Image (cartoon, rainbow, N blue to C red; front, side):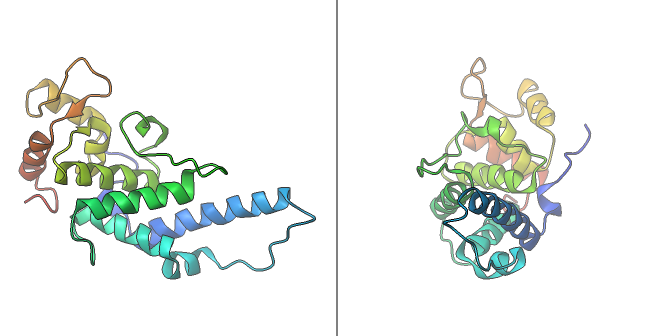
Length: 191
C-alpha cells in the first residue's frame, strides 16, 4: 500500500504547531477584515511566536509528541490527552457560538489524514482511546500506526484486528486488539 502523504513519525511538533498558528492567524485576519472599520487588529504575533509561546501552541507540540510516542512532559494519562485534544478542537474548529466539535467516530470524516494537524488529532485520539480501553476507528488507528486505512481494513478482514460490530460504519476496533496489533508492529509506546 502506498504510504500516506504525511506520516505521524515524520512530523516535527513545532512545525505542526506553527502550521496551525498560521491557519489561525489567517482566519483572524479574515475575521478582522469583516469587522472593519469598528474593529482593528493592530499587531499580531507571528505564527512562530504563537507556536512557541502560547498555551495553544505548546499544547499542540505536546499533543504531537504524545501521538508519536505515548509520552508527554507532565501528562499522567490518556485523560489529559483527551482534554488537550478538546482544547485544540475548541480553539481551532468551533464556531462563533463556541459549539464544541468533539473528535468522535461520527466526526472523523471531517478530518483529512493528509493534513498534519488532522493527522496528529486522529493519532492522539486513537492512542488515548486505546489507553482508556475504548474502541478506536480504523481511520484513527491507521494514523497512529502510520499506515493507510486500507492496511487496517485488511488486518480486520484477515482477523488480525477484532471489531465490535463488523456491520457498523465506521468500524470500531476493540482496544485490546488494537493495542496488540500496535505492539506487534513495533509502534512507539506500545512495545
